[in-house]
Length: 403
Image (cartoon, rainbow, N blue to C red; front, side):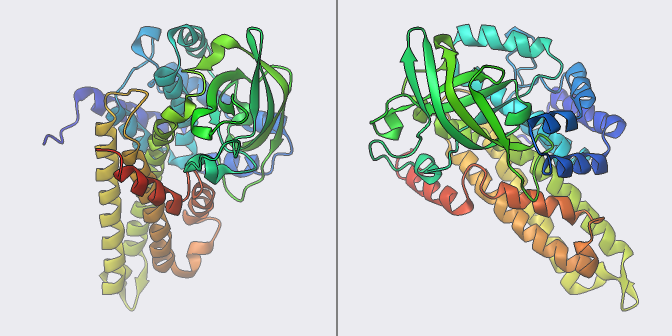
């Protein structure tokens, strides 16, 4: 097995590291994220965005890495995506890295699920715009667990409904927990297109424009979240052209596990952020003197540092393996690897917070210490792509059906 990185991968990592060193103020990124959680409306979210930084990301090519080469994008493989996302989380902090990976995931969804006509329409717009944002909306106020597992009783869950009207679809309903929805130009929207059928045979995806009439957004106020903010979305007679349908009608659930698995790039950013936190813990243990010697010389502290390092390396190995498994980048990838990473990141991060709290002791709770933004962001991420328990249930079911 060859663990050597390619020259292109080394170059991408170096580009990301140099960009962060030159352009990113990690403390300011966290301040922007905190402001976003206090925004009263969508306009305040948009005004809070560091659009100049996003334009610079576009200029160096980092925003476009997941767009197919035929449209002028990077077209990089999954391993390279994970490596770059991890470096962005490490060098620029998790808040900065999410500014890259949120649109990455939406572009990946379009690249793997949409037809050529829709790709020909969308990707040139993204390439031309230096600050276009896009994300996805799946969860709803009712029955999110039903969608995630899914429970497949006819008519339950996924109540946002699209009804065909000529060459358009008319959408009515509510979505919740839409990260970046308030600053998006486009949203990959999952809705029901068969009112009475089981959810696995009744859901479709559309690429919708947020400047269309019939859309209203309400800001969610979390204790910790992204610079982009998070919104609930209300659709009232919202119209979308037929050609914006992504994939086959009523077949969205056949690719939904892959869409959720593609959150791997998000967890890679948080792996990098976790590594940054861990390195801060090591530095503190070297500098903090207790009992006449640096605390890393105390066996209990050394043991905690060793555990944290081992957990991080295990998660890194899993993420790299998952990225390698997804190297073909198709619409139907084995979702098990993404589910494993989703579960394992959260478990590792929770334990890392416990260990950091022990090592930093009382000062760890200070708003000036690195645990502050990390802990609050983690709490908001625990439900993302399903909780740890739901991920275990999904994995267990898939183990019985996936060869």
